[in-house]
Image (cartoon, rainbow, N blue to C red):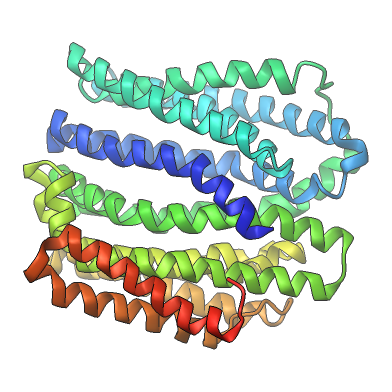
Length: 460
């Protein structure tokens, strides 16, 4: 069932991801490195606030909706009321921030950021509601409209002379359209009021996640701010382009597995036995590795040609960070989408917060130490080390909460297939080009997986 739903989400998230991938190519050609750097910094700031204020509510909704199926309206009423209260709070703080930065582009960027935050939080809350209900088609429709609308409008606005404001306004308008449809279809009959019986479990589970999410996101984006501070905004833009190019394909494939697996695992946890839960968790790990390893190997081996194809000429130096960021993303995906499930299922999210706190401190120290001497490569190495430590701590601490399988045989199988793929790419690229080598490499990976899994009657 996980594989079937994963295929649904592959379409639901795959097409928007390709559009987002295209957006990198378009925006790095239409915007200067300075403009692209400001665009990335605004997005990073919005995402930090979004994760800080709203993400715990979305995760709580997915975690508790299966447990409150008979009283879904009451749960949604509580969630909706909390959302409106949080939205009002960030609006006030955003207005204050706009006043403090003074007149100019950054004041206008802060005001646009507030609008973007409102729309993004509402869009993602409803996307998680669809995910919890296993409404894959509606989920895919919403994602597609947002991505197509954002790129189309953003490009038109840039060509119309709006510069860095173009892609931001494109995102705002595209999500506003989808948000209106959500409000009419899913919330029109919901009574928005707080129910204490539903509120306290949401707070107990969700609030520790706030700190975890803040620190996790800071680990992933703080390097951009530190590069802008220690080097300059142009280097931050170049690093961000390479980071996104490496991060998005790997995290997309792994998140597709998580989108399908996590709601099913929660439902099994609530309504079936331990044996079923362990079977779903084992399948989850297997699929994460099967899709994550070839994406990481492919990006690492094809970093230069892919970077030169996708990125504008001013951003070609970003190819150097792609292999390290791809590896770091794989490590982080295994933690977030698998080993951390121990804390979610047992509602012990404070353990997660402790792990990420240590990783945040280590990542910050490594960035401050390495960026001045190694430039953007120092930030890339810090990412790999921080995420590797995070995964190790999650495995160690998770065993004290609940047993989540992390089979080293799975690592050996997929790792061996990945090494075979990498060897094939290395041998064939000088002879048949990177496109042909990439296709053959995927075939080699598939054959090795068949040998290591199917011939031993292990279901992927």
